[in-house]
Amino acid sequence: MKKRNLIGLSLIVVLIFSSCILTSGSIYIKENYVNRGFDISFLQWSNQKDCKIELNRNDKLKVEIDCYEGKIALEIIDNYGNKEYMGNGLNDAYFIVAVSNTSQYHINIKGYRASGNIKINKL
Image: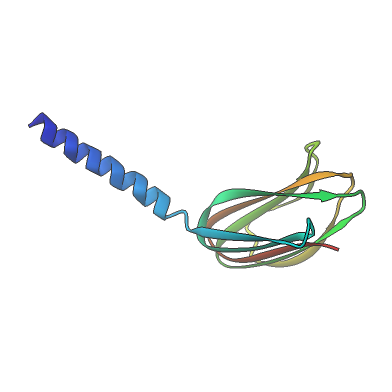
């Protein structure tokens, strides 16, 4: 009887964890050329991803966002913790970010059931 309950409980735990994994969706990141930017596609994606790019002072990043479902948040942060950009609930957007330091920058993307595309290119 205890073995049967243990097997049943184990099965429930496996199903719960597998459903959490399945709901995270998918993301595909393609780096453009050598350190020039990223093309990012996502489908029903709920997670967080960090991309890195080397930038010099006054370099500019062109950001194009087409999120047709769910929610997207984006941060651009240098190695010193300075936030050059931070936005939440982004759907369709086009903007340019000029960076103030020479540094490796972290582009943090967070999605909640998000589907769409993001293009980030160094100008």
